[in-house]
Image (cartoon, rainbow, N blue to C red; front, side):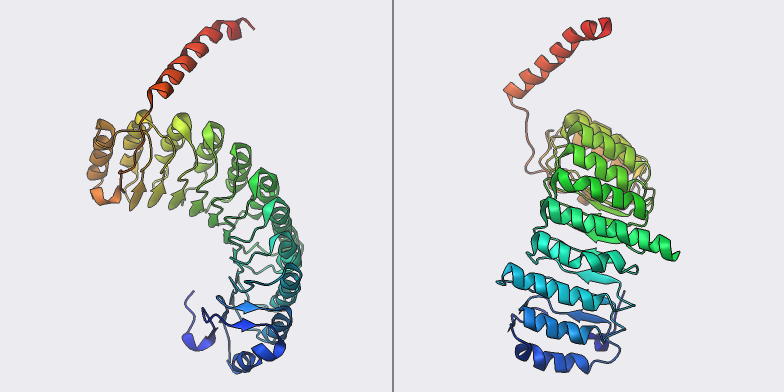
Length: 373
């Protein structure tokens, strides 16, 4: 969405400390004079409660506003002050009929901030893009946000509207497994999501399984970023099942997610049916040689691939599996440069080899007993 520069008001990155209404007034005077305002950029400054309330009184008059870029605007402010600010600003945003994008990332308002914006999220049925990255939401705040999205879906149904939300960014928020069920319910209800980014949230396999099951109802999903959460085999199995539903998926980032040898194979085998993929990040996932060989087979169908990241896994960077991967890329007339660096590959230690052998022997020994049961 390209917005003409004369319809943008920006104080981006100026480092202003605006505490009182008097502090912010010179800038509000400029803002008032912008006709047909479509975007406001205030990121990289710090606003106090009184300045925020004064800002809100002007914002609510800008009925043509489409994009509110408000990340990193509460640095060094106290929690109660931030809560007042968020309430005032979100109340104003709720009066703007054309508003489709809100970015409140990098504001450490935690669960209190989530509570403050929840009424806006629950009522604003036209919101298409919501960015809440690095807000310290935690389980409580994440659950509050997810429930607000569910309420908004219910409001859409009540008004006979299609849900509008297309993009959700909610990374680095310590959501953990506790917030996953509510987000999964919201995702399953919405069915409109095309881009979801939830990296670095401490979500473990049970939570991952719930999230991707909810996301599987969003059949037009194009971008999924769950980097630096924990999948293991069970989360990977759930993702492999969900991948079958995303026929337009273009970008998948599950780097540093501890897929493991089994999980890596499951996901990699599921990739062969996602012909639209352009970027795939599988770095640092303990994928082993058999997974790499399986990848060489899946790659034969990924003819529009532009980037493949495999660094930090457990196979030889100069081994036969990598040669098979390169051959598969070549068959698709794709350059080797698509394959990222393999400079930090892991090797299985002797102890790990022995442990794997021991596990196999244990499984074989237990098999007759299980059959007897």
